[in-house]
Image (cartoon, rainbow, N blue to C red):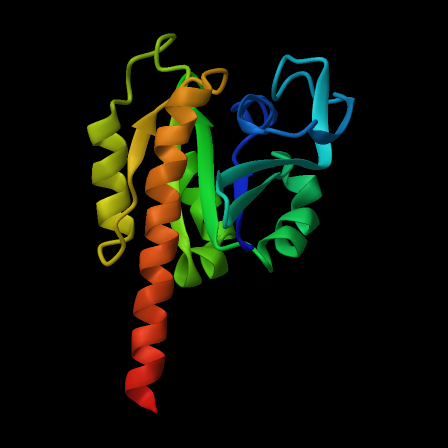
Length: 189
């Protein structure tokens, strides 16, 4: 059976744990602990290592999802988990202070994964604050990454159907990147 490994990353409170729970076909492995940083995100718990879930894409394909902690003090887990990952779903909540620069900061942290895999952006909580708009994110991403296509979607992390559309785009990009890499490798031989 072929498998894809994707990370779901983003700042604390962006919906990573909720997204894994919404999508996973198996009981989610979660490492939630009491949130001691209520100023950053007013929620009771936060992920301290990972959230893990799975989706069966077809009889021959499985998707393994790892939600990583949003707090930078746990960034060592980002490095560990991205070693096997092929793609990144970056979630950001639109009602956060400066969400567009936050996206760019997180992409910088996951640069190795982006260079060898694929990335998609999911903007949550747009109903709470409609600006910045999706075109504003796209414009900033084009300026920062002119040679990479990074799709941006408005999503509700509680809605599996919305997240599945993002994952379909992300898995397609992962497979396209793998095919281009294999073709380039074959051309070098």
